[in-house]
Image (tube, rainbow, N blue to C red):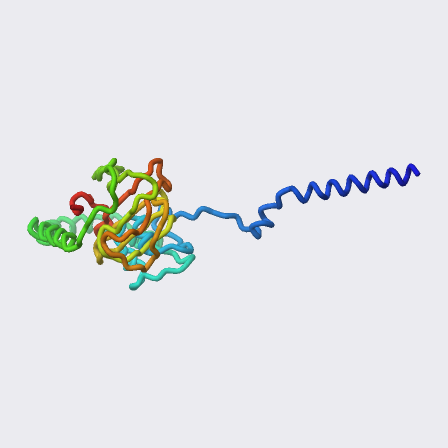
Length: 277
């Protein structure tokens, strides 16, 4: 009798432990098929970048502060600039040149005093002609001013408008670590509109520090960017018109609820105040 009673107690304990184990959350490896969720961000720190799913060449160029055509040329990528996951994108063409120079130095170690003397003589003989040639090749102030004027005309040909209503809380700065756009503060959900006609070349949250971001291409030289949105209402490759609602204001990757708006000319941030009415 005592043995039966003991067996009954053991059986009850086993049932209770089984029930309690069912209430315990299952391991992440079971719930998520063993794949951990990783926050993917485009972060370029060197001379090259490994493409991840969802990246576009425009987003990579934007993150690197480069013109997309420059990146495409370095990597031999032709329009419409299609890239693939795990593809290696070189950011600086100088990186390849540096590797070639290092390889050349390692293979040729024949630097003697006589060759150094000959080089000094050659430098003296050709210094003046090279200097004159260099001076002739320098672009004149007129040439530079013409380029600036043509760029301004190109920008003025676009019908620019303010991308959102609100208070301007930060303005563009030319300083090295200055704010490279304008910050327009308002309530969450405020309409964010395209500043000019164009096509969406990026819509996502992979660029570090920009949150939910939209990049619109207006022509071969000008892009506009709309950062920290709460919602994105357009997709990549979608045509948009000036004034069209493309997003809603938010605070993604930002301590304040505001829109960060940038205009880029050939990859470089320019002062939006010079273009907006």
